[in-house]
Length: 356
Image 1: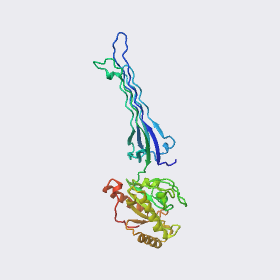
Image 2 (image 1 turned 180 degrees about the vertical axis):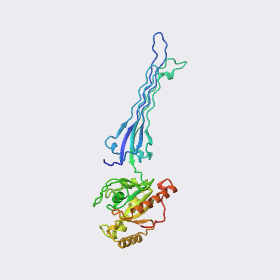
Image 3 (image 1 turned 120 degrees about the horizontal axis):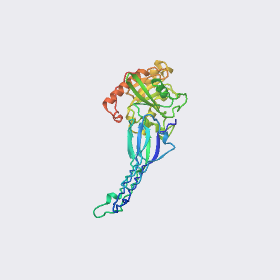
Image 4 (image 1 turned 30 degrees about the horizontal axis):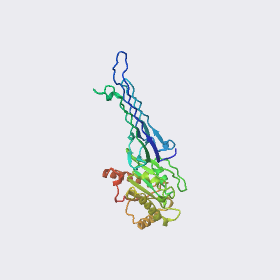
């Protein structure tokens, strides 16, 4: 299935039915009076969050949706039938905004949550409502009103506790495979990951968290280099970022600090508070080096960066240090949840855990 995380659609709620102008006609009842019924209301359009969906691909080819109009009123004071509401399922984590004004309409973050995006028109009134002592044969009636018509922008932001960052081939997908049941593609060439993946990490009975892996970033991603930064939106809801660093890059160990700084610059350019989000450096691929060489490279990198935050050394491929790291991540998430419910307020320094 193709991963689609951003679409524009057009929605048009149903028009209300017209009221009816009619008069009672029965044998031996010469002055039956008005009996025109009301028109039915037009159908509204709702979006509903469905945890069984993980992409907006259903809106890729059909982009215009129209709800049913209300039926017209009839004689004998019979009201027209209201139009059926149209309910469109979207993935949990979908942000809905007006494509013309940019106004955010709603954010669907829970399974079953519904959002009204286009209200149906009101049905018109029949002439039975206009009779009075001075107007006993009214011919007035009102027509139904038009339903709302608007263009919507749907943007999917994955719901995850932890986000993975790093250059292509830093080992993010390998790490996700090592700690969860997710099976993202792993290969020895850049940009193997083409779209985000989610994995659930379980550290104990009733203890788990969700990790999001996005395509790798390179310097200049904000200007469109590589796959660009369009997938960074999927880290906007995360509370903690794990920045995976390749300890044995093809360019040599001298390139490690520059790669870390390049990712930091792209986070600053993207905005949305990602540059100030809690971030740990995870030095990966220690299985390619001896422990002494790995620690020496890490110390040189930390010194050059002036890094005082948490860091870990692991081998995602050999699964060395991954279990201890996941337990530490879970403890950190518990602390963050107790401090504040919103990821946006989670910025700030923390004491680094003991490196594994």
